[in-house]
Length: 286
Image (cartoon, rainbow, N blue to C red):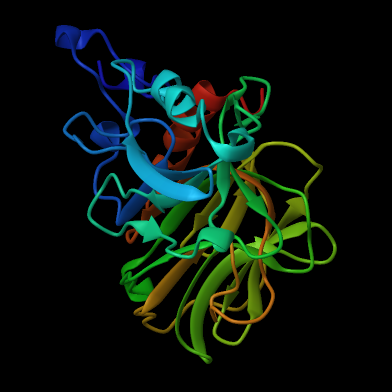
């Protein structure tokens, strides 16, 4: 029965919801605009608006089918200045590694001019990072020696090594995944050495998997791995979503993100099934 549900967001088995993390548990962090775990009782995001330049915030959760409660989001946005709503916190649905941003000017947008921002042919909700100063951050521990497998759903439209996600302990002990000046997805270690390189992307929604070998899969297709390895324990002090891991200088991405799932274990044997689950929901590739 489990195999029949791998590509589904929910199941009718016993009439209950089954999310990706129910099928593949143990994620170290999981950020998404869909519900990923049946037992998760929290919200997807905390959002902020301004009404006559006065800010207020609220949490936005999920509907019974696991999709984002966009009706409540739009009600909240109905009187917002310019019809814009911004993400304060992207909640971690696995543990408690929430990604947040307390500076209003650096908060990415989720509603623009009264409309929920969407991405892809399925027009699912997305978080828009402006490429200038938007990013989210949190405290996070990641030991690379345990293995890792990460999944990203995004449409990044700038290049020059802008970071989808980065973590850092110090300048010589870091992990990041981003895009370089050639429009390739890269995984980097330590002071920026490339350990894997995916095929050149074209503008559009992509599913990116980053495995512990290291390898990068772009929409299910394997990229090129170099001889470099992530052979040192990387215990991160800071995790950033959408920005260079130094928390200073340039590095912000321009584009939309919908889901980031981080496993601090080698999930390569489950990669195809996890990708299928994600792709079934977001309709990213055939």
